[in-house]
Every structure is written in C-alpha cells, then in structure tokens.
Image 1 (spheres, protein in one colour):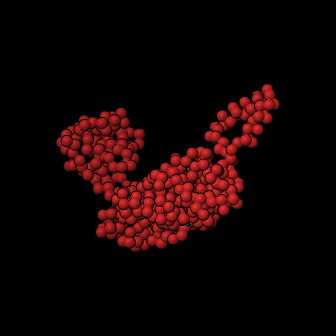
Image 2 (cartoon, rainbow, N blue to C red):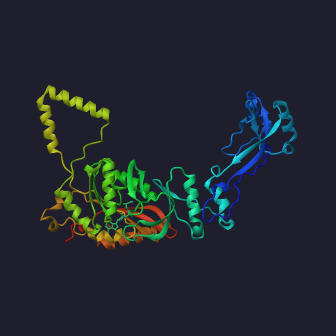
Image 3 (cartoon, rainbow, N blue to C red):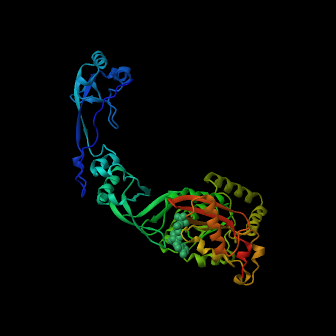
Length: 460
Ligand SMILES: C[S@@+](CC[C@H](N)C(=O)[O-])C[C@H]1O[C@@H](n2cnc3c(N)ncnc32)[C@H](O)[C@@H]1O
C-alpha cells in the first residue's frame, strides 16, 4: 500500500474581508524537503516504486525544479514532507543511493494559485462554507449568479473572486428577484467587472448579440431551440410569435426556412434584426414588433401578399459555387438556349406563401393567445379569397406552457384542456407533448404541438 503524507497547501484563512478583497493576504510559503538528483536520474526517481506517496503532487507545482543556487548542477526532486524524520527507512536508503543529499526548498503560493472555491472557503464565514455560491451561468462574457439571501453580504467579494478566476468573464452580475413581467428579462446588479451587458453568445451554430439587461435570453433552452428547428424542413415558412432575439428564428432561417419573426419588445426586435444580418439570413427573415395577438392573423395575409422566394437548395461551398459558375459559362458558350431555359425555369419557381409552423414560446401565457387563431383563414379576412385551396395542409402550432401538474398524464390532461378551451375546439387529431424542463419544484415547462384544426382556422 502507498503511504500518503500530507502538506497543508490550503489558503490562509481570512474571514474579515467582507468589504474588499485583499489579495496580498493570500500568500503562503511552504518549506519542503528536496533531493539533489543528477538530471539523468530524475526520471528513474520519479518512476520508482519506493518513492510513491512521497513525491510532490500539489496541483500546478512541478515535482522537479532547478536548484536556485546551482542552476547547472543537480536538479531538485521535491518531496511531500518538510522533515527527514517523516521519511520511511526505505525511502531514506533509496534516496541515499540515488541522490547527492537532501536540502530544503521553499514554495510560495499566492492568490492566483488557489481555485475560486478554495478562496471562498477561506473568506466566507464558516457557517456558509458547507454550500458553495460559485454556481453561475455564463452568457457571452457575462457570469450571472443567483445568490441566496445568506450570501448577499459577501456578494461583491464573491463577484470579484469569480471574475479573477475565470479568464473569459469580464462582467459578474447577480440576478435580482424582479423579472420584467411583460418582456421576461431579469433585473440584475453588477458585482464585479465592466458594466457592459451587451453580450455575444453562440448557439446552434449562430451568433447572437443582445443587451442582457433589456431582452430575454435563457441558455437552458438551447436543446429546445435545437429540437424544434430540427423538426422544420428547409422549405418551411415559420411564424415565430414571441421570437426574442431569434434563437428559433435565426437557426431556422440558416437552415433555409423563410421566417416571420415577431417580438413586442422593441429591443428584442432591434437585436433580432442585427442577428439576422450578422448570420447572413436577413433575406429570409421579416421582423416585426407587435402584439402576438395581432401578429397571428396579420402574418397569414403578409405571407400571401408578399411571398418568400422558393427554397434555393443547400448553400454551396466556395469550390462548388466556382464549379457551378464555370459550368454555366461553358453552357452559355455552347448554347444560348440553355441560358434562356434557366431564366424561364427560375420564373416558374413556386414561391412560399403558406405558413407551415407557428412557434409560441411565452410559456407563462402563450395558451391565452390561441383564440387569436380563430378565423385566421376565413375568406372574410382575405377579401373573399378561398384559403382552403391554398392551404392544402394546415400549419402546425408549437405552444409552450407551464403546468403545476407533475405527473405526465395529469400534465397532459391539464394542458390539453386549457389549449382546447382557448381554441374553442377539441383537438381530435393527435397532438404531442414534449417536456422541456422543470423550472421549479412544482412547475414544469412543456411544448404542445398540434395541427391547427380546420374548424378553428376557418371559423367565422
Ligand atoms: C420567453 S421569451 C422567448 C423568446 C425566444 N423565443 C426564446 O426562446 O428565447 C418570450 C418573448 O415574448 C416577448 N413578448 C412578451 N409579450 C409579448 C406579446 N404580447 N407579443 C409579442 N411578444 C411578446 C418577450 O419580449 C420575450 O422576448
């Protein structure tokens, strides 16, 4: 069995720093025993069975160092003990054989050496050390904490330590209890770093920029964003009623879908436009800033009156594009008819004027918007036009919601009832219910997907 000997490398305890972090107070020197070993033999000492459990193995500390007084001579193999008396007879005799004697070596550890958790354990009152407040989410360069009440007196200290210990973080905030009820963004307090809340976040191969203090964003929803976008076909036309800054809309457009994206928060609409351009899909997106209730019926007419171009096929790589251009040039030289034919067939290309999916991700109240679907296809709304012949397939509706029913069967019944009541119609065709995530002990988020009933869409 390997004998283990301990060196106390924990940071100095400093439980008086509530108002400001004194990094210099975290200096610690540890004197350890070291064996003088010729450079050619250090490898065998490190590998030897006899030395197991006695070699220096502190994180981030080398076990072999130059001897400061003889940099060209023997190396120093650092040991985990500070006195010779702590060595076993076996280790002592082994070291006598392979080394040119023992000496001491002083390690200096400072604030940079320890992890955030280790520093926090050294500064927080003992009664707060059982749990760690270091859990935080990162969005772009910003770390956001959700500190429990007991940690609040130490919030700036905690913020500074998190900032210092995470090189990619420039801003640390604590989420306050208050959430903007309508636009769903959090109020937050700066704990440390730059007061810069405009972040750049990557999700689903897209780049999103937004001001975290002005709009809604939740990185925990990324699998839900990806799940729904995976259901869409590139030819689809998506109406995203509560689009936020575009985590469904932008990746859908990147896939080839035509997207009508809406958000009532002017700041969301502003960043949605920016994200559409930054991801080079502005030509496939139309952005509006209006109440979802008026957007739902209006968007049907908009798509009919101003259709999107047909899906142009997958985006070609540069080399494919080059090869295509070359082929076109050759064709043009061989026959003028070929060119004319290409132009003609482009003119015949069907456009996209029918919405195939509605997305309603406002779980608190999306169900209450479902009555806005009543009569959206009625001819009275569309100057007598018969949408029955245009919409050969009814669109899908993906409606997010919360339920306090935790058992799946009860949750399904609860949501179905509320959806049917608001639609004013029973869901006779099958519908699917997807559990998105648990948001609180008795509160789950679901996505109900169903085909919009014909009777609802054509209701007078
Ligand atoms: C839960 S967020 C979802 C945003 C985005 N779809 C996502 O997954 O991150 C709901 C969005 O609905 C917007 N919103 C709230 N009420 C609205 C309304 N009546 N009409 C349109 N948008 C609304 C909010 O501004 C917010 O961006």
